[in-house]
Length: 160
Image 1 (cartoon, rainbow, N blue to C red):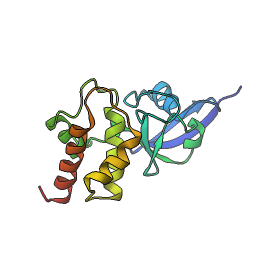
Image 2: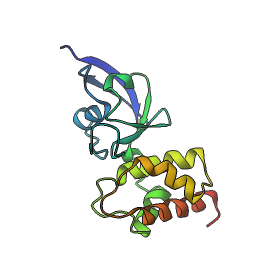
Image 3: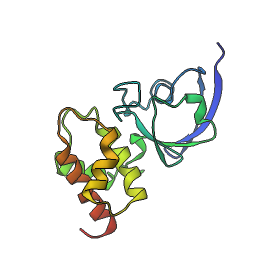
C-alpha cells in the first residue's frame, strides 16, 4: 500500500510525513515525528493516554488516522511548555500536588486538562471530574489530579 504525504502543524511547527492510510495519528506522531509523550494505553479510545488537541479539540490519537491530520493543527504534550522550556501552569501544579507517579497517563491528563481550561476557565470540581472521566490512572488516584487542575485554573485566572 502506498504512503500518503501529510502536511500539518504540530506544536506550532509545520511538519511533513508519509503515513500509511491505516496508521493512527498516535503512531504517526511517535514513529515519524519522534513525539513519544503521548502513549498507547488501550488502542480503543477508552483510557485517554493518547489525548492530543486537533484544531483545539480534544481527541484520542489512537482513533484518528494520521492522514486525517492533513492541513490541521495538532498539539501534543511536547508543545505544552513554553518555547523556553517554562512549564505550563498545569504541568507545575501536577508536580506541586504530586499528581503523578509512573507518568504513563500524565501526558493525556495534562492535554485533557488544558482543553478543559480553554473551554471552562473556572470549572467546578464536578466539571473537572466529568471532563477527565475519559482518562484512566492506576497509580496516583484522582484526587491529587483534580486538586492540581483546580489550582492551575485558579492561577491561570489570576485568582491564586
